[in-house]
Amino acid sequence: AGLLGALQVRDVPLLWRAVIALAIAYSSFIAEIFRAGIQSVDIGQIEAGKALGLSRYRRFRHIVWPQAFRTILPPYSNDFVAMVKDSSLVSVLGIADITQMGKVYASGSFRFFETYSIVAYVYLIPDVLVTRIDIRLSRQDAATTQVRVLYERTALNLAASERVNEMGSHDARQATEWKVSIEAALAGELGAE
Image (cartoon, rainbow, N blue to C red):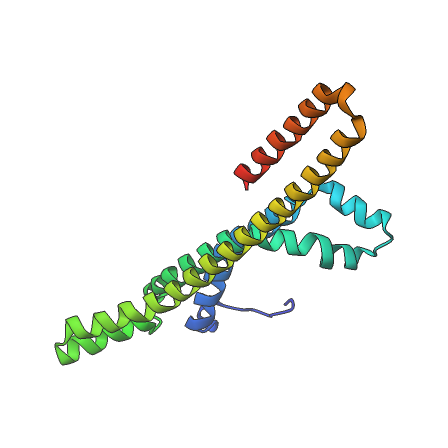
């Protein structure tokens, strides 16, 4: 009775058992990564998009997602690497994964070193590739952020210089204090990035 009828565990193929186990194990971690990334976007930016008349989709597409993606990428790539490593645990279920096939081949050919070296490379290559891509994207993001902060700093310094010139000599002390406070705030922001 029911949607699947009388489904027994033995009716589910071993490969699907492994896929379901890994999906259940990692779905909560990945959902939490996406939740945290999306909630890390400042609410003021979302409200600014709403004030500009953007639809919910356009706010998400143009405001939330680009910023959340930067936050999501490093932990998501870490989880991907961990899942690739944990996929070797499915050999416990009797599935002929790469580790299990290497074990069978090595015991038959007595070439343990060569076989397990190849198995290690099969796990190592995707992990290294994902890690390299993550590092490259993080560096590009850091460079983009630094350029943005330097641009803002230059623009605010120009505005501060114009304000000092507008204030004239009678308010020079106040104008200098104002310019120094802006520069300190910008230096703090540059250091935080």
